[in-house]
Length: 224
Image (cartoon, rainbow, N blue to C red; front, side):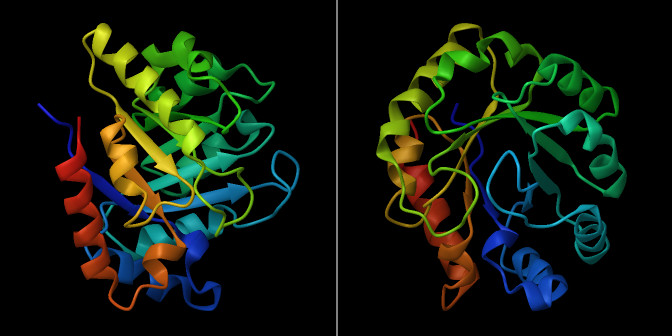
């Protein structure tokens, strides 16, 4: 049976002068969760937001908060973001930290744990930690900045991971982030993704609710 399709508007594409209102717009428009990209200026060449923003969004909405830590030392900050209200915390497989330990600490708190891969990282890199994660995020752009074009070379990696998950008899969410819009979502769904992060495509849409509905339908129709 196909996994539930989830659409997660990313606050990276929002009006940063009105983040509380933008968070509420995500909920009103039918987003399944608010996606927050946390950048440290080291692991990725940009700075974004901190735990106070997560705390504010937690107070503003009832839907889950999907928090993506683009940090070179996630073990130092995971607890802080969980305390701030994260429903899911994702870390990168590429960090030099003890990834299994960090993922285990997230799960110990009863919070969903996720692992993220940069575009150049093979799908096989996350196989050793699949037992500790609830979702896997494939970056379909180089992380750090919004508005980049979608990279189709990541699609075969999504398919590889979905087949691996199916082979061991498990259902896990596979998420994609980067250049996701009404034109690219179908290809991702047809290769095994069921969760879709979109920033610019949703926050700049004339009607976010209508765009979420359209993207959700395209993903459902394209699922493998």
